Image (cartoon, rainbow, N blue to C red; front, side, top):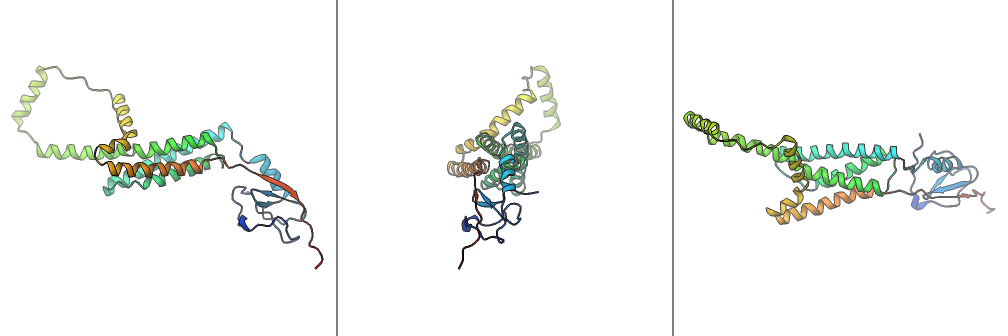
Length: 243
């Protein structure tokens, strides 16, 4: 299958006037005997030029949905990798946001078959931010579980205290427990706000983390930008003159 998005030669040294018998289409790699075209600076045969006009850069609803699905998958994967690294090593590296931004952008542009644009960029930026910020949630849960377990060992009470406490619970009304859905919603909101919550403890670290996160979001923005196709021609592949 011809890859219209990745012609192999270097475009910076391309010449508009070719040499008969030596020029090749930079997409299908077949020799060009007659007229040729220029597609974003790359030499193309008439057949590839027509295919590109009909097939590339079609921003359809299906392409957009596919890009979102791929992007969500990449965001979840990036969040898991980010959180796992922090839990295993005990180190939170903000530079991982760059990898998450690249991963989301790459996944979305793959899902759309190379189609990009403003709406793709907006989704890519939002998914990158959501993946990086919500990575704090599994880290919190992990350390909260460890803290609760250590407290149980350190503050074990005698059996009689436990019995009297149970009696007190029976005597007085218990406060209503929040629903699981409400608890998850609150946790999600806190996760999304986590890059800004860090300012209360470590302002400098939080600022550096936000800057790195912004750069990661820029990665996703640029990767999912529109890539306009410009085709010029036909140009005449004339034989060389007498020497």
